[in-house]
Image (cartoon, rainbow, N blue to C red; front, side, top):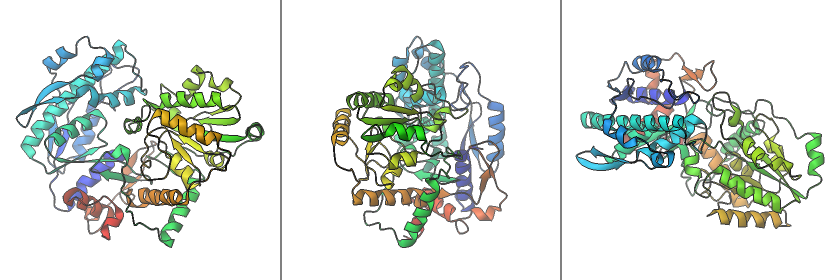
Length: 491
Protein backbone atom coordinates (compact mmCIF):
# COMPACT_ATOMS: atom_id res chain seq x y z
CA UNK A 1 0.00 0.00 0.00
CA UNK A 2 1.05 3.65 -0.21
CA UNK A 3 2.77 5.27 2.75
CA UNK A 4 -0.20 7.50 3.51
CA UNK A 5 -2.65 4.60 3.34
CA UNK A 6 -0.41 2.79 5.82
CA UNK A 7 -0.29 5.80 8.16
CA UNK A 8 -4.07 6.09 8.13
CA UNK A 9 -4.57 2.38 8.71
CA UNK A 10 -2.01 2.12 11.53
CA UNK A 11 -3.34 5.25 13.24
CA UNK A 12 -6.82 3.73 13.19
CA UNK A 13 -5.50 0.42 14.57
CA UNK A 14 -3.64 2.27 17.31
CA UNK A 15 -6.83 4.05 18.35
CA UNK A 16 -8.72 0.76 18.40
CA UNK A 17 -5.98 -0.91 20.45
CA UNK A 18 -6.27 1.96 22.93
CA UNK A 19 -10.01 1.36 23.25
CA UNK A 20 -11.35 4.16 21.04
CA UNK A 21 -13.96 3.37 18.38
CA UNK A 22 -13.06 3.99 14.75
CA UNK A 23 -15.53 4.11 11.86
CA UNK A 24 -14.29 4.16 8.26
CA UNK A 25 -15.94 6.24 5.56
CA UNK A 26 -15.20 3.95 2.65
CA UNK A 27 -15.57 4.22 -1.12
CA UNK A 28 -17.48 1.43 -2.88
CA UNK A 29 -17.17 2.72 -6.47
CA UNK A 30 -18.45 5.98 -5.01
CA UNK A 31 -16.89 8.26 -7.64
CA UNK A 32 -17.23 8.20 -11.41
CA UNK A 33 -13.57 9.25 -11.62
CA UNK A 34 -11.00 9.42 -8.83
CA UNK A 35 -7.56 11.00 -8.68
CA UNK A 36 -5.46 7.85 -8.31
CA UNK A 37 -7.58 5.98 -10.85
CA UNK A 38 -7.26 8.62 -13.57
CA UNK A 39 -5.44 7.84 -16.79
CA UNK A 40 -4.00 11.19 -17.86
CA UNK A 41 -3.87 9.96 -21.47
CA UNK A 42 -7.43 8.61 -21.51
CA UNK A 43 -9.90 10.56 -19.38
CA UNK A 44 -12.71 8.16 -20.32
CA UNK A 45 -10.98 5.21 -18.63
CA UNK A 46 -12.82 4.00 -15.55
CA UNK A 47 -10.99 3.73 -12.20
CA UNK A 48 -9.93 0.26 -10.96
CA UNK A 49 -12.74 0.04 -8.41
CA UNK A 50 -12.76 -3.76 -8.02
CA UNK A 51 -9.14 -4.01 -6.83
CA UNK A 52 -9.48 -0.91 -4.65
CA UNK A 53 -12.64 -2.20 -2.94
CA UNK A 54 -11.01 -5.58 -2.32
CA UNK A 55 -8.09 -3.96 -0.53
CA UNK A 56 -10.40 -1.71 1.49
CA UNK A 57 -12.57 -4.65 2.54
CA UNK A 58 -9.50 -6.46 3.82
CA UNK A 59 -8.08 -3.44 5.65
CA UNK A 60 -11.39 -2.37 7.18
CA UNK A 61 -12.62 -5.79 8.28
CA UNK A 62 -11.85 -5.15 11.96
CA UNK A 63 -13.74 -1.86 12.32
CA UNK A 64 -17.18 -0.64 11.26
CA UNK A 65 -17.28 0.91 7.79
CA UNK A 66 -19.93 3.04 6.14
CA UNK A 67 -19.62 2.48 2.41
CA UNK A 68 -20.81 5.00 -0.18
CA UNK A 69 -21.64 4.38 -3.83
CA UNK A 70 -21.91 6.71 -6.79
CA UNK A 71 -25.12 8.29 -8.02
CA UNK A 72 -25.06 11.10 -10.54
CA UNK A 73 -26.83 14.33 -9.55
CA UNK A 74 -28.81 15.58 -12.56
CA UNK A 75 -29.09 19.17 -11.32
CA UNK A 76 -25.36 19.51 -10.82
CA UNK A 77 -24.66 17.80 -14.14
CA UNK A 78 -27.03 20.19 -15.93
CA UNK A 79 -25.39 23.20 -14.28
CA UNK A 80 -22.00 21.99 -15.56
CA UNK A 81 -23.14 21.71 -19.18
CA UNK A 82 -21.13 23.77 -21.68
CA UNK A 83 -18.87 25.35 -19.02
CA UNK A 84 -15.31 26.15 -20.03
CA UNK A 85 -12.31 25.67 -17.76
CA UNK A 86 -12.47 29.21 -16.31
CA UNK A 87 -16.12 28.72 -15.31
CA UNK A 88 -15.45 25.22 -13.98
CA UNK A 89 -12.71 26.59 -11.72
CA UNK A 90 -15.22 29.02 -10.21
CA UNK A 91 -18.14 26.56 -10.13
CA UNK A 92 -20.23 26.54 -6.93
CA UNK A 93 -23.45 24.79 -5.97
CA UNK A 94 -25.74 25.01 -2.92
CA UNK A 95 -26.20 22.07 -0.57
CA UNK A 96 -27.97 21.48 2.73
CA UNK A 97 -25.53 21.04 5.59
CA UNK A 98 -26.86 20.36 9.11
CA UNK A 99 -30.18 21.87 8.07
CA UNK A 100 -28.73 25.06 6.55
CA UNK A 101 -28.06 25.92 2.93
CA UNK A 102 -24.38 26.50 2.19
CA UNK A 103 -22.46 27.12 -1.02
CA UNK A 104 -20.04 24.33 -1.82
CA UNK A 105 -17.02 25.63 -3.85
CA UNK A 106 -16.74 22.50 -5.97
CA UNK A 107 -14.54 23.93 -8.71
CA UNK A 108 -12.02 25.25 -6.21
CA UNK A 109 -11.97 22.00 -4.23
CA UNK A 110 -11.37 19.95 -7.37
CA UNK A 111 -8.74 22.13 -9.10
CA UNK A 112 -5.59 20.85 -7.29
CA UNK A 113 -6.63 17.27 -8.01
CA UNK A 114 -7.05 17.93 -11.72
CA UNK A 115 -3.65 19.59 -11.87
CA UNK A 116 -2.07 16.68 -10.01
CA UNK A 117 -3.76 14.01 -12.14
CA UNK A 118 -2.89 15.72 -15.43
CA UNK A 119 0.64 16.64 -14.26
CA UNK A 120 0.26 20.30 -15.20
CA UNK A 121 -0.72 23.63 -13.62
CA UNK A 122 -2.22 25.46 -16.60
CA UNK A 123 -5.15 23.37 -17.78
CA UNK A 124 -5.96 23.04 -21.45
CA UNK A 125 -9.51 24.07 -22.35
CA UNK A 126 -10.22 20.97 -24.44
CA UNK A 127 -13.03 18.45 -24.18
CA UNK A 128 -10.91 15.80 -22.48
CA UNK A 129 -9.96 18.19 -19.65
CA UNK A 130 -13.48 19.59 -19.36
CA UNK A 131 -14.91 16.06 -19.20
CA UNK A 132 -12.54 15.09 -16.40
CA UNK A 133 -13.24 18.35 -14.52
CA UNK A 134 -17.00 17.70 -14.72
CA UNK A 135 -16.60 14.12 -13.51
CA UNK A 136 -14.40 15.23 -10.61
CA UNK A 137 -16.96 17.87 -9.64
CA UNK A 138 -19.82 15.36 -9.79
CA UNK A 139 -17.75 12.91 -7.73
CA UNK A 140 -16.78 15.55 -5.18
CA UNK A 141 -20.46 16.48 -4.87
CA UNK A 142 -21.32 12.84 -4.19
CA UNK A 143 -18.54 12.52 -1.58
CA UNK A 144 -19.69 15.71 0.17
CA UNK A 145 -23.34 14.60 0.28
CA UNK A 146 -22.57 11.10 1.45
CA UNK A 147 -20.15 12.36 4.09
CA UNK A 148 -22.80 14.74 5.40
CA UNK A 149 -25.07 11.72 5.88
CA UNK A 150 -22.18 9.81 7.47
CA UNK A 151 -21.62 12.60 10.02
CA UNK A 152 -25.31 12.72 10.91
CA UNK A 153 -25.35 8.96 11.43
CA UNK A 154 -22.04 8.41 13.23
CA UNK A 155 -21.56 11.77 15.02
CA UNK A 156 -17.74 11.49 15.31
CA UNK A 157 -15.69 13.77 17.52
CA UNK A 158 -12.80 14.05 15.07
CA UNK A 159 -12.10 13.31 11.41
CA UNK A 160 -8.71 12.09 10.10
CA UNK A 161 -7.92 12.31 6.37
CA UNK A 162 -5.01 12.14 3.97
CA UNK A 163 -3.56 15.54 3.00
CA UNK A 164 -6.90 17.34 2.59
CA UNK A 165 -6.01 18.76 -0.83
CA UNK A 166 -7.02 16.01 -3.26
CA UNK A 167 -10.74 16.30 -3.88
CA UNK A 168 -12.26 13.35 -1.97
CA UNK A 169 -10.45 14.38 1.22
CA UNK A 170 -10.90 18.09 0.43
CA UNK A 171 -14.68 17.61 0.21
CA UNK A 172 -14.70 15.60 3.43
CA UNK A 173 -12.64 18.22 5.25
CA UNK A 174 -14.77 21.10 3.96
CA UNK A 175 -18.02 19.47 5.14
CA UNK A 176 -16.58 18.46 8.52
CA UNK A 177 -15.16 21.91 9.25
CA UNK A 178 -18.41 23.62 8.27
CA UNK A 179 -20.06 21.41 10.87
CA UNK A 180 -17.52 22.59 13.45
CA UNK A 181 -15.63 19.30 13.64
CA UNK A 182 -11.91 18.98 14.23
CA UNK A 183 -10.12 17.65 11.12
CA UNK A 184 -6.62 16.17 11.21
CA UNK A 185 -4.67 15.76 7.99
CA UNK A 186 -1.51 13.78 7.38
CA UNK A 187 1.34 13.52 4.88
CA UNK A 188 4.66 11.74 4.57
CA UNK A 189 7.31 12.87 7.04
CA UNK A 190 10.95 13.72 6.43
CA UNK A 191 12.47 10.43 7.52
CA UNK A 192 11.98 7.01 5.95
CA UNK A 193 8.67 5.40 7.04
CA UNK A 194 7.62 8.55 8.92
CA UNK A 195 4.35 10.47 8.87
CA UNK A 196 3.37 14.06 9.64
CA UNK A 197 0.02 14.74 11.36
CA UNK A 198 -1.50 18.16 12.03
CA UNK A 199 -4.75 20.01 12.75
CA UNK A 200 -3.77 22.42 9.97
CA UNK A 201 -2.79 21.85 6.32
CA UNK A 202 -0.44 18.87 6.19
CA UNK A 203 0.89 19.81 2.74
CA UNK A 204 2.16 23.12 4.19
CA UNK A 205 3.98 21.24 7.00
CA UNK A 206 3.23 23.90 9.64
CA UNK A 207 5.57 23.81 12.65
CA UNK A 208 5.60 25.93 15.77
CA UNK A 209 9.14 25.97 17.08
CA UNK A 210 9.27 26.81 20.82
CA UNK A 211 10.88 30.27 21.12
CA UNK A 212 13.12 29.06 23.94
CA UNK A 213 14.29 25.92 22.12
CA UNK A 214 18.02 25.30 22.45
CA UNK A 215 19.50 22.18 20.90
CA UNK A 216 21.57 20.11 23.28
CA UNK A 217 25.01 18.75 22.40
CA UNK A 218 23.48 15.32 21.73
CA UNK A 219 20.76 16.81 19.54
CA UNK A 220 23.31 18.80 17.55
CA UNK A 221 25.40 15.68 17.01
CA UNK A 222 22.29 13.77 15.94
CA UNK A 223 21.42 16.51 13.44
CA UNK A 224 24.99 16.72 12.12
CA UNK A 225 25.04 12.96 11.49
CA UNK A 226 21.76 13.21 9.58
CA UNK A 227 22.96 16.19 7.52
CA UNK A 228 26.21 14.45 6.63
CA UNK A 229 24.21 11.62 5.05
CA UNK A 230 21.76 13.99 3.39
CA UNK A 231 24.47 16.13 1.79
CA UNK A 232 25.75 12.91 0.20
CA UNK A 233 22.27 12.22 -1.22
CA UNK A 234 21.67 9.37 1.22
CA UNK A 235 18.02 10.12 2.02
CA UNK A 236 14.53 9.28 0.76
CA UNK A 237 11.24 11.16 0.60
CA UNK A 238 8.00 9.16 0.35
CA UNK A 239 10.11 6.08 -0.29
CA UNK A 240 11.96 7.63 -3.25
CA UNK A 241 15.71 8.27 -3.31
CA UNK A 242 16.19 11.22 -5.66
CA UNK A 243 19.99 11.33 -5.71
CA UNK A 244 21.34 7.76 -5.97
CA UNK A 245 24.66 8.87 -7.45
CA UNK A 246 25.62 12.50 -6.84
CA UNK A 247 28.34 13.75 -9.18
CA UNK A 248 30.80 16.57 -8.40
CA UNK A 249 30.94 19.67 -10.59
CA UNK A 250 32.86 18.71 -13.70
CA UNK A 251 35.80 20.43 -15.40
CA UNK A 252 33.63 22.05 -18.06
CA UNK A 253 31.36 23.62 -15.45
CA UNK A 254 34.27 24.94 -13.40
CA UNK A 255 35.98 26.42 -16.46
CA UNK A 256 32.81 28.23 -17.49
CA UNK A 257 32.19 29.47 -13.94
CA UNK A 258 35.62 31.13 -13.87
CA UNK A 259 34.43 33.60 -16.53
CA UNK A 260 31.83 35.09 -14.17
CA UNK A 261 32.08 37.16 -11.02
CA UNK A 262 29.47 35.13 -9.12
CA UNK A 263 27.23 32.05 -9.25
CA UNK A 264 23.53 32.02 -8.32
CA UNK A 265 21.71 28.65 -8.34
CA UNK A 266 17.97 28.67 -9.09
CA UNK A 267 16.10 25.67 -7.63
CA UNK A 268 12.63 24.89 -8.96
CA UNK A 269 9.68 22.71 -7.89
CA UNK A 270 7.03 20.47 -9.41
CA UNK A 271 4.39 22.77 -10.87
CA UNK A 272 1.43 20.47 -10.12
CA UNK A 273 2.50 19.37 -6.63
CA UNK A 274 -0.06 19.86 -3.86
CA UNK A 275 2.45 22.03 -1.96
CA UNK A 276 2.01 24.68 -4.67
CA UNK A 277 -1.43 25.50 -3.25
CA UNK A 278 0.42 27.20 -0.40
CA UNK A 279 3.46 28.39 -2.36
CA UNK A 280 1.71 30.58 -4.94
CA UNK A 281 1.22 33.71 -2.81
CA UNK A 282 4.02 35.91 -4.17
CA UNK A 283 3.75 34.98 -7.85
CA UNK A 284 0.82 33.44 -9.72
CA UNK A 285 2.81 30.24 -10.09
CA UNK A 286 6.37 28.95 -10.36
CA UNK A 287 6.67 29.81 -14.06
CA UNK A 288 5.69 33.43 -13.36
CA UNK A 289 8.57 33.46 -10.86
CA UNK A 290 10.91 31.98 -13.46
CA UNK A 291 9.86 34.76 -15.84
CA UNK A 292 11.04 37.25 -13.20
CA UNK A 293 14.28 35.30 -12.83
CA UNK A 294 14.71 35.47 -16.62
CA UNK A 295 14.57 39.27 -16.41
CA UNK A 296 17.39 39.17 -13.84
CA UNK A 297 19.42 36.85 -16.09
CA UNK A 298 19.19 39.37 -18.93
CA UNK A 299 20.10 42.26 -16.64
CA UNK A 300 23.16 40.60 -15.05
CA UNK A 301 25.52 39.12 -17.64
CA UNK A 302 28.31 39.08 -15.03
CA UNK A 303 26.43 36.43 -13.04
CA UNK A 304 26.28 32.73 -13.89
CA UNK A 305 22.76 31.47 -13.20
CA UNK A 306 22.42 27.70 -12.77
CA UNK A 307 18.79 26.63 -13.19
CA UNK A 308 18.17 23.25 -11.59
CA UNK A 309 15.01 21.27 -12.44
CA UNK A 310 13.48 19.18 -9.66
CA UNK A 311 14.26 15.44 -9.98
CA UNK A 312 10.59 14.50 -9.65
CA UNK A 313 9.80 16.12 -13.00
CA UNK A 314 10.92 12.99 -14.83
CA UNK A 315 10.06 10.30 -12.29
CA UNK A 316 8.27 7.39 -14.04
CA UNK A 317 4.53 7.72 -13.50
CA UNK A 318 4.81 11.35 -12.35
CA UNK A 319 6.51 13.01 -15.30
CA UNK A 320 5.43 16.63 -15.54
CA UNK A 321 3.61 17.85 -18.64
CA UNK A 322 4.67 21.40 -17.83
CA UNK A 323 8.36 21.15 -17.08
CA UNK A 324 11.17 23.55 -16.37
CA UNK A 325 12.96 21.98 -19.32
CA UNK A 326 10.06 23.07 -21.55
CA UNK A 327 10.15 26.58 -20.06
CA UNK A 328 13.90 26.83 -20.72
CA UNK A 329 13.40 25.69 -24.32
CA UNK A 330 10.39 27.92 -25.00
CA UNK A 331 12.16 31.00 -23.65
CA UNK A 332 15.44 30.16 -25.37
CA UNK A 333 17.14 30.56 -21.99
CA UNK A 334 20.11 28.29 -22.69
CA UNK A 335 21.16 30.53 -25.58
CA UNK A 336 22.32 33.05 -23.01
CA UNK A 337 25.99 32.70 -22.15
CA UNK A 338 25.36 33.23 -18.41
CA UNK A 339 22.99 30.27 -17.95
CA UNK A 340 23.58 26.60 -17.26
CA UNK A 341 20.49 24.39 -17.18
CA UNK A 342 20.67 21.20 -15.12
CA UNK A 343 17.86 18.85 -16.07
CA UNK A 344 15.94 16.59 -13.70
CA UNK A 345 17.86 13.42 -14.50
CA UNK A 346 21.34 14.95 -14.06
CA UNK A 347 23.10 13.98 -10.84
CA UNK A 348 25.17 17.15 -10.40
CA UNK A 349 25.84 17.95 -6.73
CA UNK A 350 23.46 20.67 -5.58
CA UNK A 351 25.41 21.01 -2.35
CA UNK A 352 28.74 21.70 -4.06
CA UNK A 353 26.90 24.19 -6.26
CA UNK A 354 25.49 25.91 -3.17
CA UNK A 355 28.92 26.12 -1.53
CA UNK A 356 30.25 28.00 -4.58
CA UNK A 357 27.26 30.36 -4.82
CA UNK A 358 26.96 34.00 -3.81
CA UNK A 359 23.38 33.38 -2.70
CA UNK A 360 20.61 30.93 -3.61
CA UNK A 361 17.18 31.41 -5.19
CA UNK A 362 14.41 28.86 -4.60
CA UNK A 363 10.67 28.73 -5.11
CA UNK A 364 9.62 26.69 -2.06
CA UNK A 365 11.96 23.70 -2.24
CA UNK A 366 13.56 21.92 0.74
CA UNK A 367 16.94 22.82 -0.75
CA UNK A 368 16.39 26.39 0.48
CA UNK A 369 16.50 25.20 4.08
CA UNK A 370 19.57 23.11 3.34
CA UNK A 371 21.31 26.08 1.73
CA UNK A 372 20.65 28.09 4.89
CA UNK A 373 22.16 25.25 6.91
CA UNK A 374 25.26 25.65 4.74
CA UNK A 375 25.38 29.35 5.69
CA UNK A 376 24.01 30.79 2.45
CA UNK A 377 21.56 33.66 2.02
CA UNK A 378 18.37 32.31 0.43
CA UNK A 379 15.79 34.31 -1.52
CA UNK A 380 12.41 32.59 -1.91
CA UNK A 381 9.97 33.09 -4.77
CA UNK A 382 7.13 31.21 -3.10
CA UNK A 383 5.88 30.50 0.41
CA UNK A 384 7.88 27.63 1.89
CA UNK A 385 7.21 25.82 5.16
CA UNK A 386 10.30 27.50 6.65
CA UNK A 387 9.59 31.00 5.26
CA UNK A 388 8.15 32.47 8.45
CA UNK A 389 10.94 31.29 10.77
CA UNK A 390 13.53 34.04 10.15
CA UNK A 391 15.72 31.76 8.06
CA UNK A 392 15.35 33.04 4.48
CA UNK A 393 14.37 36.23 2.69
CA UNK A 394 10.63 36.00 2.14
CA UNK A 395 9.44 38.78 -0.22
CA UNK A 396 6.03 40.38 0.22
CA UNK A 397 5.32 40.60 -3.52
CA UNK A 398 6.76 39.97 -6.95
CA UNK A 399 8.12 43.49 -7.09
CA UNK A 400 9.69 43.04 -3.66
CA UNK A 401 11.35 39.83 -4.95
CA UNK A 402 12.84 41.71 -7.90
CA UNK A 403 14.12 44.51 -5.68
CA UNK A 404 15.72 42.16 -3.15
CA UNK A 405 17.27 40.08 -5.93
CA UNK A 406 18.78 43.23 -7.48
CA UNK A 407 20.24 44.26 -4.13
CA UNK A 408 21.86 40.85 -3.64
CA UNK A 409 23.16 40.62 -7.20
CA UNK A 410 24.61 44.14 -7.10
CA UNK A 411 26.22 43.81 -3.68
CA UNK A 412 30.01 43.69 -3.74
CA UNK A 413 30.19 42.26 -0.25
CA UNK A 414 30.56 38.61 0.68
CA UNK A 415 27.03 37.59 1.66
CA UNK A 416 26.76 35.61 4.88
CA UNK A 417 23.66 34.33 6.61
CA UNK A 418 23.19 35.89 10.02
CA UNK A 419 24.12 33.56 12.93
CA UNK A 420 20.57 33.77 14.30
CA UNK A 421 19.15 32.61 10.95
CA UNK A 422 21.67 29.74 10.81
CA UNK A 423 20.61 28.67 14.28
CA UNK A 424 16.92 28.94 13.34
CA UNK A 425 17.58 26.72 10.32
CA UNK A 426 19.18 24.07 12.54
CA UNK A 427 16.29 24.20 15.01
CA UNK A 428 13.73 23.95 12.22
CA UNK A 429 15.50 21.05 10.55
CA UNK A 430 15.88 19.18 13.83
CA UNK A 431 12.23 19.75 14.71
CA UNK A 432 10.84 18.60 11.37
CA UNK A 433 13.10 15.53 11.23
CA UNK A 434 13.15 14.25 14.79
CA UNK A 435 10.07 15.71 16.48
CA UNK A 436 7.31 16.19 13.88
CA UNK A 437 8.10 13.14 11.71
CA UNK A 438 6.46 10.25 13.55
CA UNK A 439 8.35 6.97 12.98
CA UNK A 440 6.44 3.93 11.70
CA UNK A 441 9.42 1.68 10.92
CA UNK A 442 8.37 -0.83 13.61
CA UNK A 443 5.32 -1.63 11.47
CA UNK A 444 6.40 -1.03 7.87
CA UNK A 445 8.97 -2.23 5.36
CA UNK A 446 9.77 -1.26 1.79
CA UNK A 447 7.76 -2.95 -0.94
CA UNK A 448 9.15 -3.88 -4.35
CA UNK A 449 7.36 -0.98 -6.00
CA UNK A 450 9.12 2.35 -5.25
CA UNK A 451 7.15 4.57 -2.89
CA UNK A 452 5.04 1.69 -1.57
CA UNK A 453 5.29 -0.28 1.66
CA UNK A 454 4.19 -3.55 3.24
CA UNK A 455 3.11 -4.25 6.79
CA UNK A 456 5.66 -6.15 8.85
CA UNK A 457 4.45 -9.06 10.94
CA UNK A 458 3.61 -7.70 14.40
CA UNK A 459 1.33 -8.42 17.33
CA UNK A 460 -1.67 -6.17 17.89
CA UNK A 461 -0.34 -5.45 21.38
CA UNK A 462 2.53 -3.54 19.73
CA UNK A 463 -0.05 -0.98 18.57
CA UNK A 464 -1.06 -0.07 22.11
CA UNK A 465 0.09 3.37 23.32
CA UNK A 466 2.07 1.87 26.19
CA UNK A 467 4.05 -0.27 23.72
CA UNK A 468 4.71 2.32 20.98
CA UNK A 469 5.85 5.92 21.35
CA UNK A 470 4.39 6.73 17.92
CA UNK A 471 0.98 5.32 18.85
CA UNK A 472 1.08 7.21 22.13
CA UNK A 473 1.66 10.48 20.27
CA UNK A 474 -1.12 9.68 17.78
CA UNK A 475 -3.67 8.75 20.43
CA UNK A 476 -2.81 11.78 22.56
CA UNK A 477 -2.98 14.01 19.50
CA UNK A 478 -6.18 12.66 17.96
CA UNK A 479 -8.12 12.06 21.17
CA UNK A 480 -6.74 14.70 23.53
CA UNK A 481 -5.58 17.42 21.14
CA UNK A 482 -1.92 17.30 22.14
CA UNK A 483 0.81 18.25 19.63
CA UNK A 484 1.82 15.53 17.18
CA UNK A 485 5.43 15.67 18.34
CA UNK A 486 7.66 13.00 19.77
CA UNK A 487 8.79 15.29 22.59
CA UNK A 488 5.17 15.81 23.64
CA UNK A 489 5.72 12.69 25.75
CA UNK A 490 8.06 14.69 27.94
CA UNK A 491 5.72 17.65 28.44
